[in-house]
Amino acid sequence: MEIKQRAVAIALALLTVLGIGNAGQALDYPNGRITLVVPFPPGGGNDAMARIMADRLSARLGQTVVVDNRGGAGGIVGTRSAAKAAPDGYTLLLGHTGSVGINPTLYRNAGFDTLKDFTPIGLIATMPLALLVHPSVQAKNVGELIGLAKVSPGTLNLGSSSKGTGSHMCAEMFMQAAGVKMNLIPYKGTAQTLTDLIGGHTQVTFTVIPPAFGAITSGQLRPLAVTSPQRSMLLPDVPTASESGLPGFDVVLNYGLLAPAGTPKAIVDKINQAMWAALADEEVKKRISADGAEAMSSTPVEYAAIVERDLTRWADLITTLNLKVD
Image 1 (cartoon, rainbow, N blue to C red):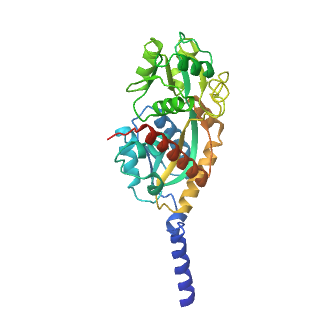
Image 2 (image 1 turned 45 degrees about the vertical axis):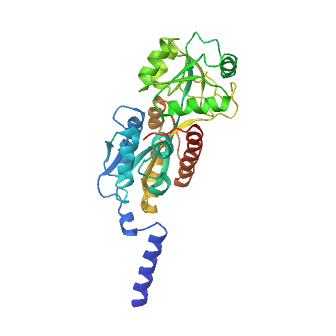
Image 3 (image 1 turned 135 degrees about the vertical axis):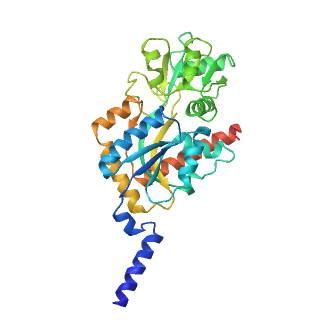
């Protein structure tokens, strides 16, 4: 009997070392409410994505998943709080390229390290941006826009959301990849960026598609390209940047779920399996598509690689441009 008890103790210890235990806790997970932290205010794309997943995960896991919006400092406040939560599967984070891929390098004191403080669970969706111009711009594709910017440097005003946002970073990545320089004009948000572009005060912008969809379909703005490797289902006739003048250009915003580091592997795997089931649902795919994204499933390991790639590519750009936020 003593030998058997010792064997059980060693096995449980080994499970803990491998990140699989607390085994008992993982077996009955979940047995209470789960909080999904969204590090942005209600109403935006992050919030919409979280609510889609919370609804379906609640049904799959048999416990209520509550969305907790903790906005502040461009996503820093909520992400930092989630990093400090107990690693028991009852606090999750809605991850976004901005909050977990850009902010750790952009902010001088982010207060968390994505790779050390979080365990990736799985990818939810990827979202492209659209390259839009005012109709007065004499360019019908990306190649022509690059040519125009090179022939007349400093004449095009490129509006973007505030420093470190997907709109801003995509614009910087585009100018670096194309070897052009435009006058970058930052705005506090997407609405004002689009208002000034429609008014002709700026000539170019990069933005997620849904807020600009009405202006695109009415002809107030002209889409030149989307920034993803594949065309967007919302704008199927608009080519990718890679197709239309900038080969290999690929910038998407990734959404996924993460848990505090140390969360048992069995719990991570259980949530991941629930995510796969939810994202296979046609209604979920339609809701995500309506928000301008494409539903994408992954394993925890695959999502970890995506997060690491985001961190590396944006850190390189931020360092090259010496972009920092206090």
